[in-house]
Length: 386
Ligand SMILES: [Zn+2]
Image (cartoon, rainbow, N blue to C red):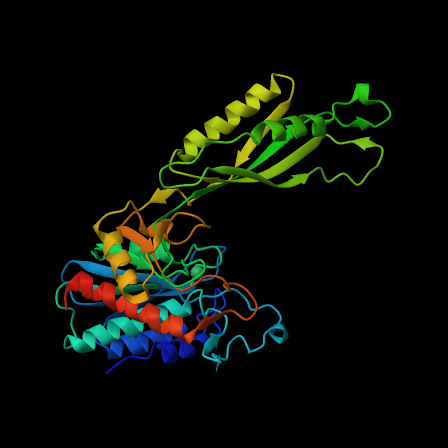
């Protein structure tokens, strides 16, 4: 028996699972995995102010080590379906390319792992040679990520589930399959700088205190580099994303000016130290003449790195054997659910090529789906033995 990743991917793509809708995607996976001998659990997590979201955990085997594959079946909206050359939820294959919302991010990756696991289990008579294979699949990754992986991991820990290593199937590759393993992510922190002045008539600036002047000074000071990068990361970066005064009047000096910013930071900083650094720089630049405050948003996206070791070596070897490409370990890009998983076990990310993710005509070559299935199959074999 050889499980077909393209057929599984097409079935998943036909489920319109735009966050928070399950769209039939988890029900389908439940069915496929249960038939293959997995013990499947479906949980709905909820919290006031957010939509309840369905999640899935499946495991075959009861012993350690437990290799877990993590992923999400939810997708971002397709936008105008008429802009697509193939309908976003049809799962069309044309010219050896699979089209659809989620083809690379990341129903394609899930389909490849499921096919690889089913194929391996069939070859082993239904059970891994040792240990356990698990899937941790959420429907809440693309949106607020509150009722998803973070709660799924807590749920699993409460039932005594232990994870040894995790592969997150996000589209990690940049240009071709095999080029990149994501082995860590930068942290992300959002803040707002608020400068207070005194409102007044624009013709009498001596009677007012324009906060825009102070804001400009502080913004300039905060553009200085935060570091020069570390062994595993590019330099951290503070980027202003909006400057807001909200003043509709031409002859009025406003009383307050605000600027929002985001910091993507590396492993040279903790969130606390980073806030202190930014606040010190502002204090020096203000020199007691500018009245300002920082509003920091809570962040659950802390920096982490999975250092090169036996697990990354095993994955890199499997990738090289199948694709002929030697992957590099990268920590670039946005955050992912790996930021939650890293608190439970070593995690790396490897999936399809990310070029069309979230785009119109999101698509994956059939050849990539077949190669990724072979990579996952090889990782499983190396991990458990064949
Ligand atoms: Zn994704």
